[in-house]
Length: 582
Image (cartoon, rainbow, N blue to C red):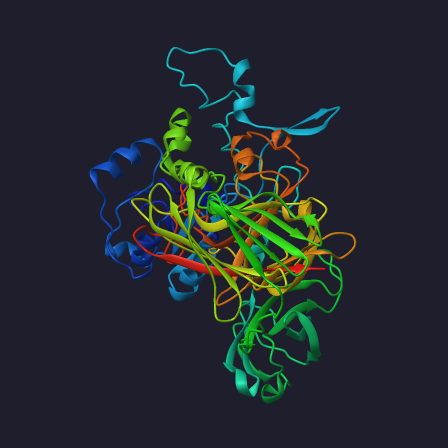
């Protein structure tokens, strides 16, 4: 075939994934290389294969051996970054490797768009996939239930795109947009406002780009301007942003530099933001905690405690906050309790994706059982020297040890919750706290990364600024319902009703993560399609130290990289504060 193609055109290079002896392909082709293989390829090291690789290669894999002399060719990933629903973690790390190693010319994300069939019903659209059509295919003696369909898809393995089947971008789309940007700014000396502009384009300068800078203090704009810049292809330009570092306010200050198109083009409107870079110029100055001075009383009860203060009450029973009233109005719809589970992503399920009957046996479901069976006990209650009521709680949690909570209540109705614990045996999915609040608190405002969903290993494309949207808009629909809607690096988040009343949740010593939905995570875990997810008269909030990354280096298998793994046998602890908005 190559000889026939060369007769037609001798100017083009050839790629052939199945070329194991390098007699046909002009590149070294690899599919889904893991981190260690990426580094070996970049360092031009010889790669050998195992007996398992040999067997897998006979089926579908391309784990070919590579001798050093083969590195006269560039390396290309014919498939990488498997974007299966809530995925595409570690993506920035791939680009870092492409730019680090001069023999790497990039790769092809698998893939662009989900494949799903829309079924119109009186109740609305339903998005169907492989397993839904299984009943129409002929039975086979060797058939394993729920593994294939006449559509050619393996259950939900038809949803691997950065764009959904209805052509709405997934959150991973914005990560790709940012990581693939051909314009980059790096800091040189923040105190002097000195930065360096890099143009990654091979042939195009940046004369068509407007460079707009905005300086924000805790998400509020305090200065802005336009920089007159240009940069030749593959070049760099030093420049200065005219802010005064010494007069920055006490709030956290973030500089955002946006790259806007000066002119309209067939592919974008004038002023379209190609990309951006952001820099935390200074963290917030630690504020001295002001402890309210008011009336605060508590009463011990059977298995718990009742706290009453200025226009609020708080009740703890069996370790959980079961009631929280402000101005006589109950705020909670479900108790405040520890949470270590998430509705598993496709990647979380790993190899059980390929044998669906084994999915319920996956070890990660231990964290669902641990969360739902956690038993707390109040072990201490007292007023401290500042007049605050401190409630100490000890937890009995499966696969955890030394698990405690301390609730510190102030007279104005605010309280701090500190949670500590050490998971055992298996990697942790999440370390956090969950509770339900009144659905009327539907307006959400947060200072942190956004506006789209982010995770610890997929957040490069999100700005640290102030964001606002409804609870429903926080959610992201994946074809198969799963963990979604997380926001990272959050300094505070507010849930308010139409009258502007509600609660504010603040981080203390480190940023937190949060999500909010009109259904519980257990209900999300049960659903197989979006139309099966209930819509409850409540908002269920998760406030977390962190979640494990979503990964995506392999098809249907997370292979989460460091430092995004939540390892066992390690103590996790965090604190957040809840403040009433009256």
